[in-house]
Length: 348
Image 1 (cartoon, rainbow, N blue to C red):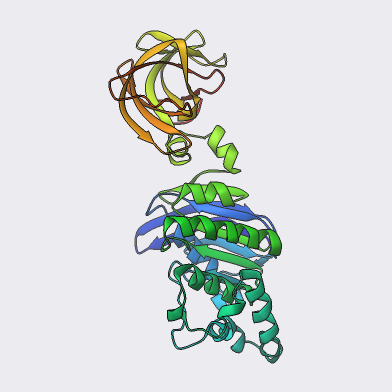
Image 2 (tube, rainbow, N blue to C red; image 1 turned 180 degrees about the vertical axis):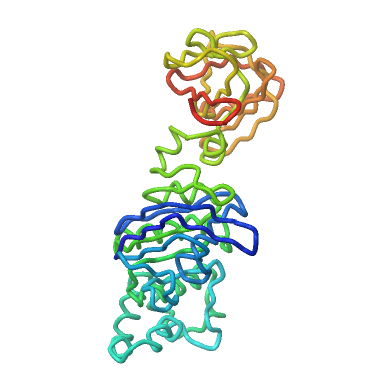
């Protein structure tokens, strides 16, 4: 296990800079998820950690050692890719042991024991003599993980490893990866575009946009205290409602009607109001809101509403499911309103 330190890291492809002076510290044994939309730089950043992309500026430190000029095989890292990258002509046993066969005599001598240990951890014992074509997608992904485990690296790198799996299997595999980390406590950097994966698996989340870090924090910290509109909209499903509003004497107004009190000290004027779907409540003396669309999901129902001329989505757990055209009386849960600057998008 090891600390990972990223210092003023930049990446350029020709004249185009795609990573802009990123600074990030990842602690020994920590599970950190890199999230963001396509093209934000998360996979490029991971490949720079792995040594698969060169560093244009700044430093990558692993266990206190600058690895900018160190080849991938000598960085003591193991990477699991989106595509499983298994050798089709090798058994599961040989696929998992392959990386050890290229190392020193000691590693080769202990490869059988390492493979058996990894197979036991991942439940692959019955499949060691099978070829990849005889495995399911989830089993192939576990083999790819086993190949990383046998190396006993200081750092695990995962590049969207669950993207090729169906929804049910993704849920199962993310549980297995989290259990694996809890057992091995190896420093892990995990790239995903799925914020639910990041929320459920990571100790900390790094939200990226256009090659910049927008916010770093624990999952619930980002959920309850987003630094700006981008993070507020990216973390959470459905996304946080954001609507134009007015701040006047400590009260948020929609359509000239006070809908909630906020902390004092903020300047009156136009703001952006953020409210999570679950913080929209049904109450007899609330504000009338017309139901536009209803999406039942089982444990909760997403209701798209029109109130004060604005469209909001509420997450309701009441057993009674409304119908389009119904009018509900709603209120915003006190203490759960978020206020953002309409010009900068930053939380105020």
